Figure 1: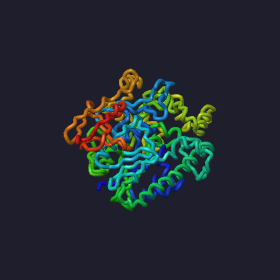
Figure 2: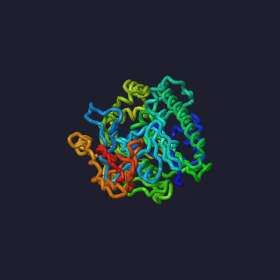
Figure 3: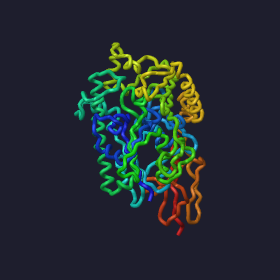
Figure 4: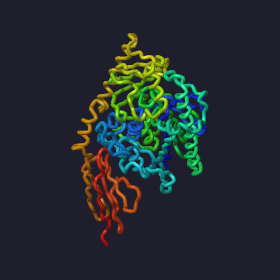
Length: 516
């Protein structure tokens, strides 16, 4: 039987907040025990330093800049108007040919796929993606004997919880916290860090509950477990920034054959690699269109990654364009709009007390040279950092004569990547909207076509890479159509076509009965 696979996903956390990466500020016993029986990845990266674009990469194995999901946010499940102040509606980009949620491949292979509960993939999630996606979704709801892929999201560590939980009991003493050198030693900043560490303790407890459920069901030793964060940390110069603090994530994978063995892996892995890796672990060959490569499992790549590519574009109401390449040794950042500050004005981020404090200190000239770099009115067009000697990326080498060859190599490599991956950030978002939403309307799929034979029903669609789904009227979930449906003597069925970037087709109700 294929292995069960479980994703435990926290939000907005940099790898170096965790004890398995050397931070002793708090103990996280459930995660530490998980790491003690699994692989800790020392260089794992989100592709965008904010959630929705990165989650689109996780679900497809593709760069958000290729999908058109690079802006934060495009599809807004909570507000149909999205961002009327800048003329951006809620929309789903029309992703390239054959791109779909990787869970479809798992479902076709017999997996029961559940998501509890956050989606936020920067597109309207097609009904083909999940067997269940809700606060009640759980592997325990699966039919007997089915393997599962289950996702649990823990939003207790989200950026917003810094201010929402600001008055809650602190579980760590602020005086025990070491803050990075790009922040001043300030009581408000220390307090926000203490809130975040306290939230990590709460998150670890929640993770322990899910792991105990696995053990109670006698599934712990039959389940591959991933723990990771959806991007780097929640603070200014972390979230929405392409520095290590914004893109470097914790990643622990407990593979079944490891059991109580602890290992470390220093290969560079990216969010685009997660989907093909899960498929590989399930014994499914990843499709050729995926840009990521499997780093575990039957179809593990023999290629050792040389670079990780990351991007930043619009964040809510503010637009910028930044690209970065990280090698084993260096980080290169290209700022396409150097006249804009690193600290882009962002209404949501201004809810955080430390952001308000940084702005106040900067305005009054009370930040030192390191603390004021990120708050400056402009940024350099290029940045180059030696990550071995300068892990906090504070000393830009881009203008140093002895690094010009290195700089040129990264420039050239970035240009190749932009063209090879068809980076949509080259185009104005409103021009893309005209292409994807003709007349301002999300296009709609045509209904599937039915061919009724004596004992079976064949279904086709005029869009070759749309997914056909069907269900009985009494069902709560849709089944992916991948072979003719046997006709019965009692039932009618409902049928529709779905695809990312299109409205679902109208539902066809078909009499699936065999004439008596």
